[in-house]
Every structure is written in C-alpha cells, then in structure tokens.
Image 1 (cartoon, helix red, strand yellow):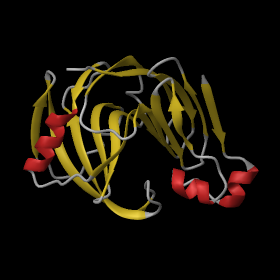
Image 2 (cartoon, one colour; image 1 turned 180 degrees about the horizontal axis):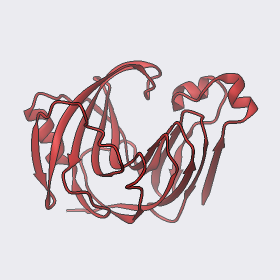
Image 3 (spheres, one colour; image 1 turned 30 degrees about the vertical axis):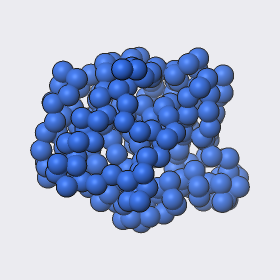
Length: 220
C-alpha cells in the first residue's frame, strides 16, 4: 500500500506551485505516479491545500482533500488503449466542485480527455457548445470540446484540446465502454493520438471532499 500526502510546504513554496508530473520532476519534486498492485496510478496537485491519497488493494484507492486549488488522481493503466472498464465505490461530492471521470491523455496530438460519470455543483461543460451525444452503458452522454492555452500537461506547459463526454444522469458505479466514446468523438471531428495513461479519477477544484474508488477491466 502506498500513501501520498501532499501539503504546500516551504520547499514546495520555494519552487513554485506544482504544475505537472514532468515539471515537478524537473523541479526536484517527486511526481505522484507509479504502479501499485498491477495498476498504474497518477496524482497531480497545483500545490494549494492538502490531499491525502492512498493506494489500496487491487484497483482501489481513497482520497481526502481540503481547501485545494486543483488536484486529480486515481488508478488505471499506462498506456490506456480502449477498454471496457468497470468501477464502483463511494463518491459523495455533489455539493462541492468535484468530478468523477475516466480520465486520460494522448500524444501527437496532445489531448486531455474526460468521460464524466458524476460531478458536483459545477458542470465542467458549462458555457461550451455541445457537439453531439453518445449512448453507452445504459446512459446518454453529451459531447464537448474545449481548448486549454499554456496550461499544465503531461508534456509540461502546453496548449492542447480537451474532449468531454458528460453523463446526463449522474452515477457512481457501472461500466464504461471507452470505444463508444472514442468513436463518437471521431465522428464529430475530434482526433485522438497515441495512448498515454488512463485512470478512474477523482478531481477537486477549490473544494474539500473525499472518495474511495475501485476500478477494473472487463475482458471480452
């Protein structure tokens, strides 16, 4: 079991806010990435507030955060090609700014993507033009695209696209057939690149909360 507790310490303050695992490594700060019980895990924070992230048995993890700026973490695979994912757990953050998503990256092009299963008091697609919908695993998801300019990424500070599938009816637990979303994005002209990591992530933004999630893969 691996436990990672990140606080905004004097050392972190001296080097500036943590931006991304790659940038953190360059600054001499240990990135929150690795393998645990056969799964890849990733953890990122901008350095504000406090987060306790703990890897549990198998594909499980738990996290508690308090007064954060932004943080995201979870377990999954690296690389994360199309899979049928199953997940369960506890996530009761509907009154705060938080997301529960299958979250990942591709390179060439650099893309950050979210399949959002549940979110709190802010819909991450707010103010964004809907490109379409996709029906998958008993639900309907709205498809969106946004652009991030000079923001933290797995390749340092970069400009990149974000692809979104946001479930219309929130849930915590079920299956996610990722290929359905990737195909739907492609039909709307959204191009993914080479697979990087993919995790079942909890994200918190200017909030406090907790989660305990288990992820697995359905082999077909």
